[in-house]
Amino acid sequence: MEKIRVNLGENSYNINVGSGILKEFGAALKKVNSYEKIVVITDPLVNELWGGILRSSLKSEGFSFDVIEIPRGERYKNLQVAFKIYDKLVQLEVHRDCCIIAFGGGVIGDLAGFVAATFMRGTYLVHVPTTLLAQVDSSIGGKTSVNHPKGKNLIGVFYQPLFVNCDIETLTTLPQKEISTGLAEVIKYGVIEDEDFFKFLEANSHHLNTKAFEDADTLKAALKVWQTIVSESCKIKARIVEQDEKEKGIRMVLNYGHTIGHAIETVTKYSMYNHGEAVAIGMVAAAMISKEMGMLDEVAVNRIKVLLEKLKLPTGVDALSANKIINGLKVDKKIREGRIRFVLPKKIGKVEIRDDIPISVVRRVLKTLGCK
Ligand SMILES: NC(=O)c1ccc[n+]([C@@H]2O[C@H](COP(=O)([O-])OP(=O)(O)OC[C@H]3O[C@@H](n4cnc5c(N)ncnc54)[C@H](O)[C@@H]3O)[C@@H](O)[C@H]2O)c1
Image (cartoon, rainbow, N blue to C red):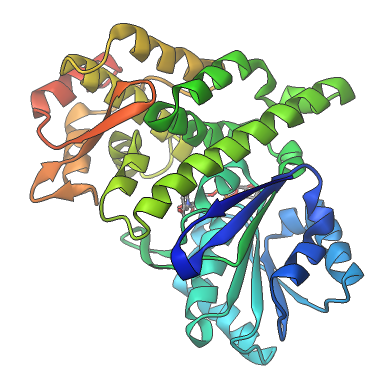
């Protein structure tokens, strides 16, 4: 198991990354603190697939606990569901010394994190992420949120957990789409911070699909590769978050691919591409904009595209309107004083934030990607 420290002063914590570590979760929890009550918040599928291991690890350390199940899906990440959880916590007579365990993907992490941050002005929180996206991204950095009918993640607070427990083995039950979604963020880390990590992904792309989980030999090799991928991704995100806990500056580099990706999600009303797919298209768009601006060479643009394609992510769009995407960009959170901010690669492993990109360049790139 690898321990990655996130240094945030009194809010510092560890991310544990290892294969099979869910079995030792109870012991890890005991080492960190004592708790008046433990409440696990999860969804029915995660509970069915992996809940047995979590429950026996808690029981074997003598913990008693309650489990709250939330239906699966983004549409349950809202204030009404948060309120139902508060009701249940009141009924369970939960106090501030309670520990909430967010056990599932990013939806459960954001929702349970938001509840932990707000109930009784804050209970203890531990993340046990079970999707790739949650392990490499959403469980790190303390962003918790629920959606508002007018937009995703509009209501939320920064709230750091006591620790994060990433068991690589939980990834083996994910469908390919969830693996690909998480991989978009993983590739992002390579492009923004670490060319060697990007090269590692290029060299190991054949392990990064659900087929690799199907027989014992390929599974063993794949788990080794996933261990490196999750650990390195957590380190990169942790180093960025440490410099900018509340997203006032450098943390914005994590938005590489998200400017156009988010506009695509908005224009298609989240129906055509999942988040990772939209980010993948956004990363290609940003690389092409960078090339048009004379900042990045063609070879690097192609490396990004080829890797995304190998990992079953899209690199173009199907006849969306360029104008609609550009209008979508103008209402994005990443706008400051009317200027659209793009995170643009200068080489693989280094990016620059720019807010002076002519709309004509953005339009030209969108058309090359397949927009009308
Ligand atoms: N807080 C942050 O910094 C941050 C960053 C990125 C994304 N997010 C949020 O994360 C959410 C998306 O997270 P996600 O991609 O994990 O989706 P998700 O939480 O919806 O999980 C996807 C599906 O995978 C299932 N699942 C979970 N673990 C599984 C496992 N081990 N095996 C099989 N199935 C499993 C779940 O039941 C769910 O239906 C969004 O709400 C997004 O806004 C937050």
